[in-house]
Amino acid sequence: MTNQQARDRLFEYAYGEMSPQDAVAFEAALREDPDLRADLDAVSVVRRAAAGLKDHELPLAAHRNILAAARRATRQRAMARPWEALQRFLLSPSFLGATAIIAAVVVGAHLIPLQEIDDPWTRADREQRAAALAPAESALMAAASVEPVPVAAAPSQRAQEAGEALVQDARGRAGGTTATATATAASTPDRVHVESRQARKELVGQASGQVAAKPRAAKGPASIAPAAASLRMLSDESIGFEAAGSGFVQEDAKRSKAEVRRFAAPAASPPMPEPMPEAELANEPPAPPAMAKVARNVRADAAGLLKEARDERAAGRLPDALALCRAALAAGPSDNLLADILAEAAQLALAISRHDEAEGYLTRLERLPGGADRAGKIRLK
Amino acid sequence: MRFTAPPMAFIIILLVLNRNRSGAVYKEDPRSDEELYRRYAKGDGRAFRALLNRHGGAVHGYLTKFIGDAEMATDLTQDVFMRVISAAEDFRGEASFRTFLFRVMRNVATDSLRSRIHRPDGNACSLDDPGRPDQSGPALVEKMAGSVVPVDHKTFSGELSQALESGLAGLPPEQRETFLLREVEGLRFPEIATILGVNESTVKSRMLYAVRSLRQSLAGFGGLP
Image (cartoon, rainbow over the protein chains, first blue to last red):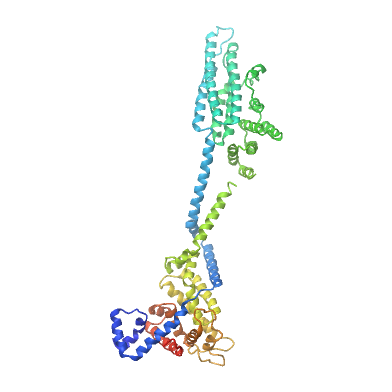
């Protein structure tokens, strides 16, 4: 390595960037060149002195100013291209992570109430009750289809016997339905269930008694009409009970109600059955006054029931008021009246700590136009 | 309550995740400078934070030593990064980010030095020979080695530091910047040549002259040969 070559590669040697072979050649040149040795010595001295120059920190204020300027520039760029900024945000790990966590929480929170609402009246249970009620309806339909026989014509002993057999069959099957309802009520420590059972027994007894008595006298569909009307009342009451129990069974209840009404349609022309005689009532187990009122007014105006419910609430009889609300709901109100009844029922249910029932009303209320705000206020209360 | 809780929880989780990400994660970001700078150009503010954490101290240190005024160096550091911010979308990656950054830094420093030399008060100095005043004002070397020299260099104190700072201030700017880029910032000669826009031989030559001058400045120190 010549002196000039060694001089050109001085810094490579000083900074340790030279290969070992070249370093040997450089050191040979170094021994022969005192100026080169002096330069190398200067480099090492200056490097040692300059070692302390390396520690430096950017002042915090400057750091913040620069970052603020960077953020401003980023925002300006984002404003110029909003879709890119939105896309970047939506695909950011923070957003995706937060979305996943919230989705898991929301799904979990909605699954738990669903199970709670379905517990007392499972779908299978509802189907079982519907199946039990269907033969009774069929029997009554068959009884109603018996040809009317003029009183002055041939003796109607056979028709009468057929009608009676059908009615007995209907009674038996309806009794089975009641037993099912009773069993369900017994499995649920719920006063409303028990009240409903009693009212139902009363109505079934009324229906079967009328059906059993009338064919002998009048014969034909006309004689079945009061029984059909009573059965319709039973159906309505049952639907009201279902609707009160859960918002989720409302659709099923409406469907059942439509079917029963279709069945009872031929009997629509006769007047409503007479109230049960006092003597018969005395034989029945005493029903709570509120539920008796429900039974009498189940076909009455929903608005009137709501008013009565409010009166009961004002009197401090909250369970009775709630039962009236259920009856009002069973009457099939719509629009604003339905919203009023649901709100009232939800507040009453909350007041007596029936949270699941209240949640069912609030869920129904939220589905109505403008009902979400109202439900939200009730929840906040 | 039931309907306000999910959005509130969402916002809280988002903030927590963002806070965790904006911490020290990017200080040891494994991505290259170029990738971070491109990310910033696309709107990722945290990428710029990582770049600043990586190079902010180096830029400030260089400018402090080159200008000799810590306060002014801080202002100039902000200028450098403002230019880096505004040039983000134009970065093509033809040179490395560090080369680009130091080129910007060098331009800012040179502009600043030039404006100091050609001040409106008439106390201009020669850029070629900053140790000799053109007119009646004090020499730049005197200003830098005197009261203008920063006093907050705790790690570089004492007579040795004074002598080295005086020696640095007495160097011509092109030698000073070459020395600082090589010795303080740790750039290699080809990289320095790219930043300064000269060939590598010129850079080595400037470095050698700078070392010889500084060696003379440090001649009187007993601890050093």
